[in-house]
Length: 367
Length: 264
Ligand SMILES: Nc1ncnc2c1ncn2[C@@H]1O[C@H](COP(=O)(O)OP(=O)(O)OP(=O)(O)O)[C@@H](O)[C@H]1O
Ligand code: SF4
Ligand SMILES: [Mg+2]
Image 1: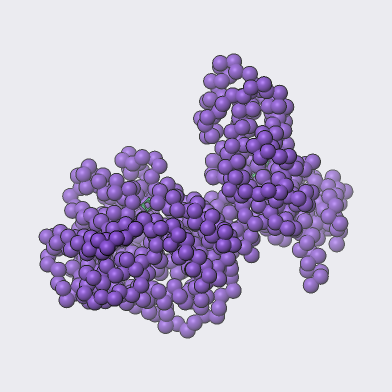
Image 2: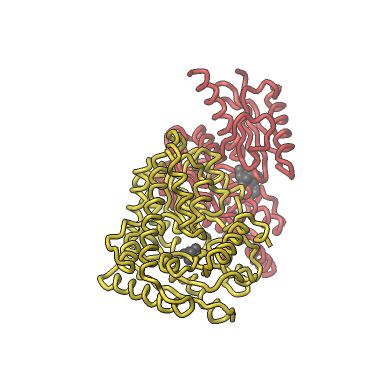
């Protein structure tokens, strides 16, 4: 069992326990990807996201078909190995069929004692009713959560929504500085810091980001710029290798990062309305059914504004939503003169010799 | 400058090329990689040097490529085999727009531009399907020497259909075909077809119109080349010794590197 000895996992667990003890917070384990964070936070619930727990998968295979992504496999493994004892509940957003399937295994068949919440969000193409539907889902979830966690305090909710806006703005600035090449963080450092968003309370996470942004701008980095797309930046060895090759990830299209962490500023100041503003103001994404043209344009815009030479698709094996989009994106990017590389990865599995060769050959090609 | 060395430490073979100042091949060698990349690299370089009648210590630059590229003693630079196969194939056939390198554990398809520059590439996944290793397993199973697989396949009147791409499953298909007394020629042709189909899936993405060059050990298999030509609908360039093209590309890069350094 890797988990106990794994430094990130340990830091996460210590933090959760401290949040419970020190602030009386309750903790919900949240599966990818889109969920109303601010609503949970306003009820003094700390969302802890489950993307890629570093575990040896042994129990989960008994419940899942073999062609399933490792995000789902690792998530289920975490539950089956009894490593969710500190959690008060689970939340399953309606991300894809695989998460949906996992939700039903956990809720209907495993007989675990913890409450499971589900969150449905509208998929594109959005209609006029989509916004109404989204707000309705938020209100419904709030009602269900209130039964377990006590009443929603509207003043607190407003504060947390404002803090959410602040967080998006700050992360946006971090991305802008990186694309400009003056942030001075390696690829590994950037994502190690950003991924703390998955479990740190914004009261703790925002100061980390602000401190980084306050440092004097670094000299413009000279490496080759690329965009990386995919579900999440794992295995981290890919980033390490890009660092070694002098390739800077100048922007990304990761579901776990820019696609859901950045959004246009909300217009409304009414909490539920503001949350709808940011949901519909997020970047195009296959798990939201966005039109492929929109996603292509979004990646092309990123490439243009960061002078990236190419796009690397870091695929989670068997991720269906991504598999549908990627061939079309590759074709579209190539037509615009961008180099592309598609790599298949397994979470927490490090790098094979073949993967190293692909990355190096890509670096030679765009260099 | 006397000569440069290119060395390709692949998963199955380690190949070295000694190149003179005029891009002339002075000598080369092909040895098995075995269990030590470093030992194989040493052996290949010594043997190529003996073949060229030169002393390795006088090499101006060694560039290494292939899976074991980091383990080559004395290597001054490392380059991936993608770039090296492109450069090597372009050296012999300047009409090359696509290189198909089928080696022991990998098959690679490389789109090549002017001067042998890599424009795009695709590589097979981790498994052995569509690679030389697949053919080696089958040649052992059928008790047909590797270098005769091509002749067998070309002599086939019909063709067995091998439905699995997976080496393990295909092997059991072969066993049952043998048990049913299916002509070996037709089984071999079916196996070659399965390799070609795997590689074709990558080739198709590249949609090139110009020359196609095959490199790597499997290009020595005339059966695979013939089926690939059938699939593409045109002739394929095959160098006289396709297995050393990666090493040749590395040597060419060494030469260009030194000339570039001298010029500026
Ligand atoms: N004389 C031959 N006739 C037919 N096939 C051959 C012959 N010699 C080698 N091969 C094929 O070539 C393969 C090895 O090719 P090569 O030496 O290019 O691989 P490699 O470079 O070591 O591997 P990789 O590039 O995947 O690391 C063998 O698996 C075999 O199928
Ligand atoms: S979006 Fe892809 S990686 Fe994420 S859970 Fe669904 S199938 Fe798995
Ligand atoms: Mg090779």
